Amino acid sequence: MSFFQESLFPPSTRIGIVLNENHELVRLTKILPWRELVTLAMTIRSEKVVKESGPQPRFRQLIGALALMAVRNLTYREAEDLIAHYAPARYLCDLTDSDWAIDHVTIFEFGQMFGSEGMEEINKLILKTAKKYNLIDQTRMMSDTTAQEAKIPYPNEVGLMSRFMELMSKNMKKVGGKFQGIKKTVKESTKKVKYLLRNSHLFAKTTEQKQKVAKKMYHTVKSVQKEVQALLRTGHKLSSNAGKEITRLSNVMETLLPQILHFIDTGLVARGKIIHLQMSELYSIVRQKAGKKVEFGLKWGINRIGGGFVQGFLLNGGQHLSDKKFCLAGVDQHIGVFGVAPQVYGFDRGGYSRANIKKLKKRGVKQVGIAPKGGDDWAVSKTMKEKIKRERAQVEGSIGSIKSNRYGFNKPNARSVEAMQWCGHRAITGFNMMKLAREVGKL
Image 1: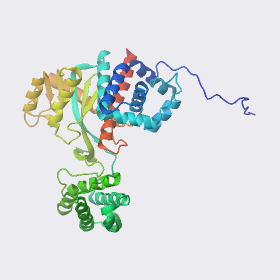
Image 2: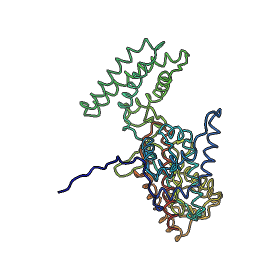
Image 3: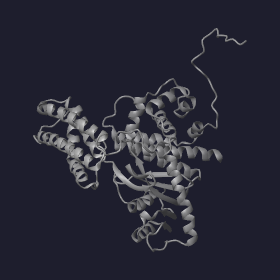
């Protein structure tokens, strides 16, 4: 017969443990270039803060928090909890001898200050650190493009129009003045659009029926849009957040409505179609994959440097550009980190053109292994072609790793394009940090 004997004294909440030297976070703490990272953070803050006031942020501890989020794909609240109660996380944040706790708001504000460009700079420091340990062969690089999918519903016409009316109605409740006269119209139109949306989903089975419902919804939304635009043209500036959102939504819909009408009438998607009201910069990326012909989000260039480390980049703030531009930009990004172009470079046939081959050789690439189109020959020898093909196949593996749940590159929990870019660079930085910790452990 077993029994439970209660302790005479309550257990202590202060626990002393010895960390395992081989724990991934302990190894990472010993490897990261903290001095350079703190200098980077101070530089970014000095550029963004207009007037220095109050105490300086604890740069070392907060950079540790960002590193923890990167290697574990954590939310801000999860990072706060782990740093407070998990010894290796406290070690990474240099808090083992401190009672100071980092709250999620502080981490969020620090991450906001860094921005996506700051996260990209952190990754460059990680790549340089890997080079210092001779873990990178900078003479070899393979590139590809990939889509960072946004966490948004499938963008169809009736859904976009319904969402517009829902957001417009929500913000109309918070403003007065010149909008007072159309509040009732917006409210009634929103109810009508919701009814039509339900009708489209449940009862419109054929293409003709769906077109008819969509056309009715279009005319309802168009009438509201006209009234809102007429009021906005009066010249009165809207200072409240709700007023600014009404202006932004109406301006987005001014571009989107003709695109919606074009699809309703022709069944064809208009060029540059807006797919999300809050993140209007997102676009559709045709990939022609099995089971997923189109992805919605941002197009990234991915460089896999010799040794398996990864660099990611966007062009022109995330605009949808051709693979030919990403092909050249991949080498430029490599030169920006290491100072020289790779000797061997590979890219898929999307980046092929004779002009691109000449430009890459001019940049210093000796073996340009871009898969040719049509009847053109490879610009490298047969032996080198086979080597480049084998190495290029590994780029897909690296892309799959950063898109896994471990790092969270794909479908991040972000509500703006800037936040998506930040999460993308964070995922790539986390992947490189963990690879650095593992590879240095093998030395």
